[in-house]
Length: 464
Ligand code: S3P
Image (cartoon, rainbow, N blue to C red; front, side, top):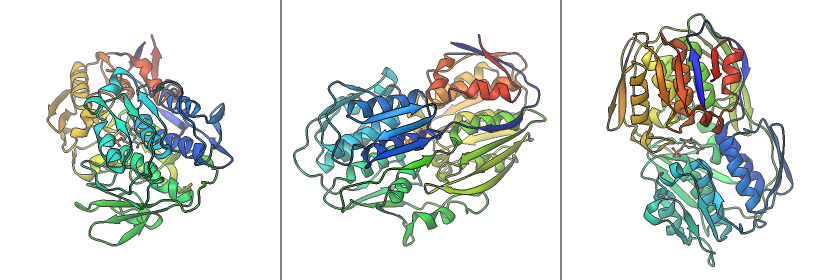
């Protein structure tokens, strides 16, 4: 599908966003292991979560969607059954890596496969540590399909250092660790997304995060101290390494959940940047997830001079939430590297568009992980921005963008990457000529209402 967007007048209004993708995945999965019926409202109904729900069906879990409210009949910690056919994870690496942890935990024979794009993504990073725990798993060349045999022995407790900070890998190993014969201890070179830890704690498990030069930091205290530059949080410090400890459950049950999911900060990113770069705009985003391991983009944009105000409204299921008010702003350049990269890992497509509108040259370093996302986000982003007339240069571990000139516009391609498609659409709001985005249907993987939300704010955008 082709989408066409033209230069817009001011974007104005108040919006609610679909439920957070990372939280939706985890909430569905932990609800499946719970006792009784869980109810998850504002669940993300989109391509990536549909494959997770289909997988849970294949494992014998009963669920029902009513609009965006998901009810899950928990199978309990021992109630999953072996799937009859290969589980299709579509294009969703989160689904594949979290399910790898779930299958390791359950010890069931199964095959996880996915789209050609997912088959290209690195899975050795879960296969290797799961094998160390004693999981009978095989993946040719470290890529999907992942083939699990039936497990006959209890899993061994894992002490492991992740070569890169990755929430998907960490979460996979924490889920597997629920069935281990002792505590799981995972060390990472940076503060990756900590939703699994927070959710497991809410469900009654003992999870502690420790920073290398300090003592243990229980999550509810870490919230204030570890990460962010928005009100109430302090900046992440230097080169700390983070170690997550999980103690396996003594009693064999997890409670059900009642959770109204906050809006997805990664979907919010596109609306924030759209409002920032479109003169005269003012948009309020209500009830947004403000977990400090996810808010790196807010910090980067504020450093660039963005007029963004954050109004914290409290916590839900251990996750900080609030409203975000954004007004169009004149942006300065910034250099992004180190731990900040991990805390805005999904936001570089949106960030690149902000950089293209900032005066001067912006540099991104230490971001080679972007080559392993839904597309090679360094190459794909730079080449598509160049097609719009933006001066974007690829480096081995990031990119640089010179902004300040109004881009020309033109025809671009999504590379099958939902976030690239949305970023290019946002760029179209400030180009001289209309922008056509080919392959835009992929947006429905994570934000099916993206166009409707932009239109409600006044943008000129539609499918051709
Ligand atoms: C996610 C973790 C990140 C992120 C992805 C969602 C998660 O991936 O890019 O979109 O929900 O755990 P990595 O763990 O590979 O960094």
